Amino acid sequence: MAGRGIFAVRDVRSLISETSEEGTQLKRAVGATQLTAMGVGAIIGTGIFVVIGKGSSLAGPAVILSFVLAAVACAFSALSYAELASSIPVSGSAYTYAYATLGELVAWIIGWDLILEYGVSVAAIAVGWGGNLNAFLDAAFGYSLPDAISAAPEDGGVFNLPAVFIVLAITFLLVRGVTESVRVNLIMVVIKLAVLVFFIAVAFVNFSTDNFTPFAPEGVDGVTAAAAIIFFAYIGFDAVSTGSEEARNPAKDLPLAILGSLVICTVFYVLTVVGAIGIASPAQMSESDAPLAAALDQGAGLTWAAAILALGAVVAITSVVLVIFYGQTRIFFAMCRDGLLPRRLATVNQRYGTPARLTIGLGVLIAILAALVPLGTIVELVNIGTLFAFVLVNIGVIVLRRTRPDMPRPYRVPWSPVLPLIGVAFAVYLMTDLPWDTWLRFVAWLAVGLVIYFAYGHRHSRLRTAPATDPDAVPSTSPASPGSPASPSGTAAPSVPDDDGTRS
Image (cartoon, rainbow, N blue to C red; front, side, top):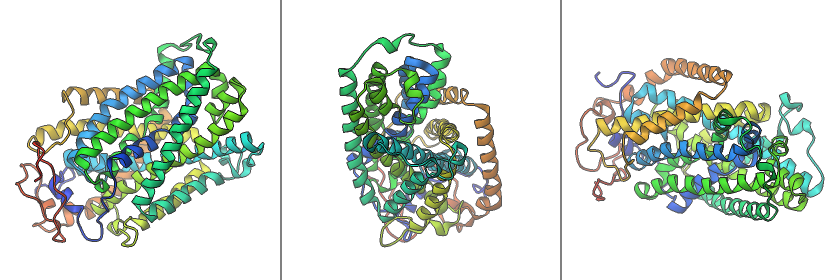
């Protein structure tokens, strides 16, 4: 039937109506402050507390410029995320946006990519959490966990017990409910911002310009190479869009949270890295798994301050694990609800209001990955997956502007398509700096995904299994008719704001 091929596009109104289906309905319980805290919680973590060391080894003091470059690259994509998140307030983030703009096959590819990005990201952050836990134990009590239970086999251990512990603890919290999860995250965000303010204050009191020369020992190449790695530090603002379906006022709150969290984190990042180089050399930071704590300990000789920072890093990274893992469960949930993955996994637990079965399964798999895989290999895989998602989200804005010019857009990217195209260019540019073995692993992952799609997803997709009367059976080639769509269960779907701010 027309509109049911591999490039069939989901109608936006039918996507929104699905959010009210009995059995797969999530609770709208997250406000603007909590959404912004989710963004800050996801962004400030392993990137600034861990990856800054690797970035400074590549760019030297010019790593400051690498942080700015990575922020600018993210900013253009953040604008596109803000437009699509406010226009299509449905779980799934870039996966859902691709389904509504570029078709099912592209949606599957980006969804499969996001499963890799978020899952591997959680594992990487969990490994960083274990390193910072050890740094705190050493700074505060002079004790460190033995390598056998705190490192991956490739790094001389047997398995990483702290990484497994934090993944399973967050799994339990996410199963309990979104209200409890965002409340805990907000508390952790306040703590980690306070710790960064403490670090910045201590660093500037002990500041010296000696470590700023030579400023860019590797030139422009070093700055861009570091930016491609440091980009990992900014991953997270896109996780805010995965909470679209649980936001109380997605049209207003999602753009504010996405853009606001990116601005807040960029300011903190730049001040932190300037302060770090003011008290420690790039070499001192690059040799440590906890570079900011090392900067205070070795650079400034403040062991007591290093202990406080190490504790703050543990709290900060915990919130990142929470938000990124939350994002992955919602993307997986959306793919299951669409039938591209087993639909039974999209069942929402009636007691907790969360996809509990799905969350537990993913938690176990990620815990195994975190226990056995070293951090360096994981970070590069996360970066390429995120950059690929950014490319498609920016393209999605351009496509949807042309195919659905009438669609309500509470927030609009200014100067489209110029800014989305710049976002695409930045993402592609940073992707070219990633190693070839990372590209090979990424292509292999996508190849496996295509096999699964044609063997299972294509045949079980909602577009092919829905009856002819289902809105999804009709390709979205014409504007949706006015009026609020009814969900299959008969309840009214969430209303969508028109361009003039009214509800339709």
